[in-house]
Length: 94
Image 1 (cartoon, rainbow, N blue to C red):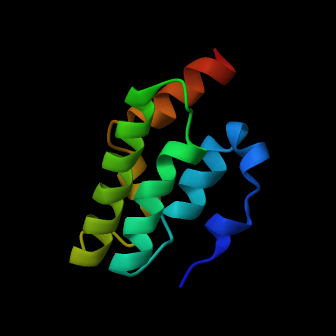
Image 2: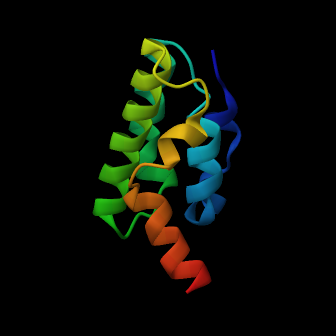
Image 3: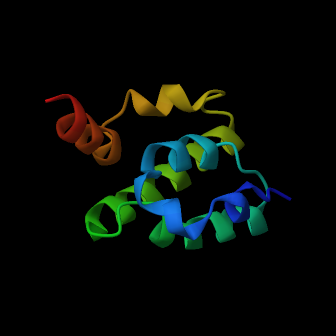
C-alpha cells in the first residue's frame, strides 16, 4: 500500500500539484487508487476545481491505459491533451 500521501504535511500541500500527479501515476491497486483520487482535493490546486477534475480524469486514464497494456509509461499519455499540464505550463512558463 502506498503511504506517501500521508507523509505530505497538509500545511504545505498548496504547492504540490505537479509532484502529487507525478507520484500518483505510479499508484497501483484499486484501494490505493481510490484513496489517491480522494486526496486530489487536498493536494491539487484547491482554488481551481476544473484542475482537480482534470487531474482525476488524467490519473484514471493513465491507470486504465497502463492496466490494459495500451501504454507502459505515463509519458505516453502526456502526449495527449492534458489540461493539468497545460495549465501548469501557462502559469509557470508563459
